[in-house]
Amino acid sequence: LFTSVEMAPRDPILGLNEQFGADTNPAKVNLGVGVYFDENGKLPLLQCVIAAERQMMEAPKARGYLPIEGIAAYDKAVQGLVFGADSVVVQGGRVATVQAIGGTGGLKIGADFLKRVNPGATVLISDPSWENHRALFTNAGFQVGSYPYYDAAAKGVNFDAMIGALRSAAAGTVVVLHACCHNPTGYDITPAQWDQVVEAVKSRELVAFLDMAYQGFGDGITEDGAAVQKFLAAGIEFFVSTSFSKSFSLYGERVGALSVVCGSKEDAARVLSQLKIVIRTNYSNPPTHGAQVVATVLTTPELRQMWETELAGMRTRIRQMRTALVERLKAAGVSRDFSFIAQQKGMFSYSGLTKDQMVRLRDEFGVYGVDSGRICVAALNDKNLGYVVDSIAKVL
Ligand code: LMR
Image 1 (spheres, rainbow, N blue to C red):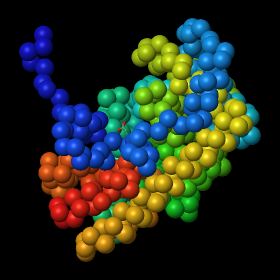
Image 2 (tube, protein in one colour):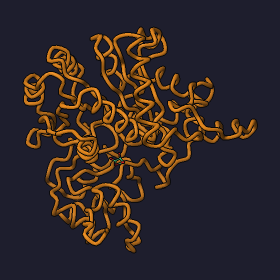
Image 3 (cartoon, rainbow, N blue to C red):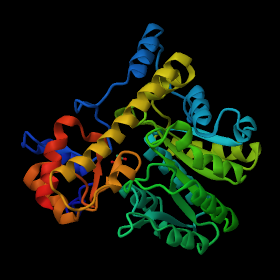
Image 4 (tube, protein in one colour):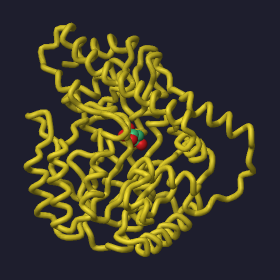
């Protein structure tokens, strides 16, 4: 049975973690996977999470099965965060939200559901996009194409080409959009450009699927959710996947959600019933702990305040590292202008380094980034920055 099974290639991002773990170089630095490390290079355990867990331990609960759609208070808190608790769609019961196994789980539930309601649709992802988008939608049975996004020469977004592609897409095409902190490039479109995207989605009758994995890592919780508000204002149906992996530093708990904004309360009820079938036939129902932590933090005013402060701390530190990286590269005598790194948003920077240079960084210096040139600036700190800068200077 298995003799003809082919060896699959390593995952382009998580595979690097495996390689990093096996690397014996004591100076190694992991700028591959999108994980925030603090100023001491440690994965943070947020104080708000510790406090929520303490509160939960004081009144320990038995672990029965959760409803298929997850913890009700969690789903409600997600809606409040993503759309606003007072928004017309939430108040009107027009959003179907389900707890998901991380943001990836939210994308997968949405993809499987879309395959049922819109089986012949093509999916368009940005060029480039998170490496898993293409695989995930392809595995759900879709033809996956792309719309232009990154402009290497201009160090930014080729918006004319992007909007042109959206305007010529067939009705029903699913368009995967990064709500904020574009992964991998770090370049977001402007509010005025979002207006044009929303208009194209609406007039061409496209299906927008917003991947929101980094809310709070760009400019702030509200600011990073602005694109969602624009879609709401347009009065159209759309999808949003949410991840709390980064914003709560709860990577291993796999806490995410999928929300589907519908035209009516009745539509939302029927959509929810279908999402539940997708979940039930994949993994039955979601786990309790991480979602309970997030729900507790989001619904307890002191804990929520604590979270917002901690999230702001992570955001600020990333910005400082961006600036420091630009300055240190300059100080190291690198002539290429890297100032664009300070303009990018979120955890990642598309560094412009070639695949060969990325491989050299890894093999010769133990500095791990993705072959595409993406580096996770959220893993830089004052201690490893000098080494990373010297290594980049050498491969250049
Ligand atoms: C990343 O892009 O590195 C993160 O989203 C982690 C992942 O699952 O790939």
